Amino acid sequence: MSGKPFWEDFIQTEPWPIVRKPYIIAEIGINHNGDIILAKQMIKSAYQCGCQAVKFQKRTPELCVPKHQRDLLRETPWGLITYMEYRKKIEFGREEYDEIDSFCRELGVDWFASAWDIPSLEFLRKYNSPYNKIASAMLTHRELVRQVAQEGKMTFISTGMSEYADIDYIVKLFRDIGCPFILMHSVSEYPLINYKVNLRQITALRTRYNCPVGNSGHESTMLPSLLAIMMGAVAIERHFTIDRAYWGTDQAASLETRGMATLMNYINQIPYVLGTGERVITEVERANAKKLRFFIEEPERNQSK
Image 1 (cartoon, rainbow, N blue to C red):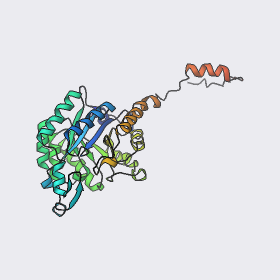
Image 2 (tube, rainbow, N blue to C red):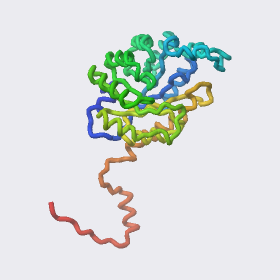
Image 3 (cartoon, rainbow, N blue to C red):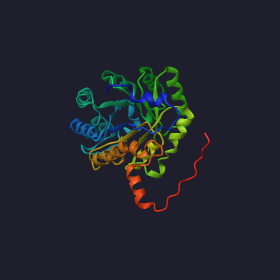
Image 4 (cartoon, rainbow, N blue to C red):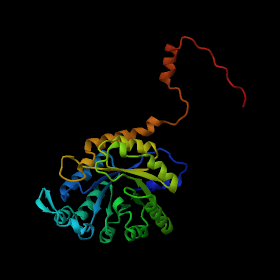
């Protein structure tokens, strides 16, 4: 996308919260189930809804799957297979990411991915995506986050499952290196029920770290995202699918096309609904006043300056 990066205004502007239209990310993640055709359908659908970016996840299964889980059997669309076999089947490689990169460039939509290990980070560098993402699960992988920060790209940092000490460390690291970032409030439950969303953390993170904060949601409803924007969230990331009935662990925590399109419609209306804050009497109000105000007495006006 051309022009000044969206995040510069948020980083340079105080005080918060200032409600603007946020940057909207459709988190496709692994909802594609290893099917590039389905992935491209999801990209196009997210783009048509008005999302500015789509996001994926990149792993090296041999590094990211714990040894005690590798041989566990799992019922999948490919039959009863081990967890390691399942992870490999849903993982995209060079050919698929080349297609994703080309397809997104044709549409004019940003794309990026969260790297879950260092070889995956090295793999993704070829594509020169505009942003990086540190998943909540990777926030304590210190060598990985150090290498992400050294790339210097604006980075979304999810904070699910993390103590303040974990976030303190990564914020200091990014600031010492000089890499811009946006903290993303997140609660790592899939799906997340509304009474656990804890959106006041947006204010707490912004106050503690004096930085822009967004929200990465795993809910099946739109309400938390809208409230997050009203609290000054500068970016909204929502898991996205085109059918929540698809097989997969994240489908139930995702918005479908209709839900995402509705959310985007509400988001687009927020600046108009909020208005300027000035005291304005509309022309229709003036006409109604003539009809409805049968007793009018001029108020005493303060003449002092």
